Length: 225
Image (cartoon, rainbow, N blue to C red; front, side):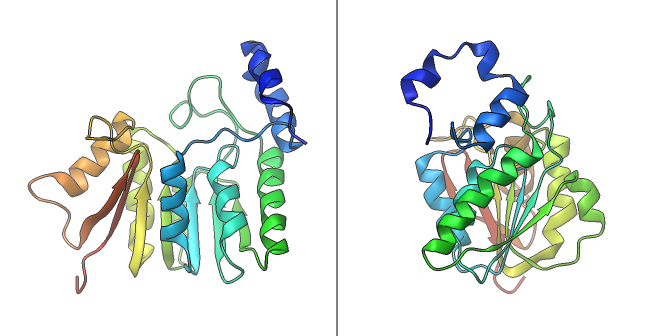
């Protein structure tokens, strides 16, 4: 049972942002993981991932979006979750961090909920830097969520490392990639990468923007490319 919202709000900031204390509470189910996506983005994630065989999330943190996927995707999906854990300034605000075991417990609880309703995806953990994992990756990807290192260099590195494995009908979602766009939010790094690759006068051949919601941009291959 989670702590009441009023109790959580009254907790001093120094305790709220203590990585180990917070991980203990998140892992134990006493407080929810920080939600890094809006309700509209949650709908987008589930809709675009539904029915996909291989789903990959780069950047898990406390497991908010991973738990959503683990609870709602079916038993025919392989859910690959990639995160080195700990504190990483290019991926998270200063002082934020997540611990591996706490996040795994969050995702496991959600997967059990999915199983109770008829089936949950097979969860594969990759506790590693995404660029290290990319070097040996060979599995075709149907749905890729880039939400790890938010620097321009890190975001571009994730794209370069994984997009060649995306299936012809697969999609790639960039989080925090709509800074300064109408009805959008985001951060400079992912926003600049998406702008360079897909919005400029010479967009990347073979790919196009399919959909945009809040902070998230969805791109897919051009038919026949």
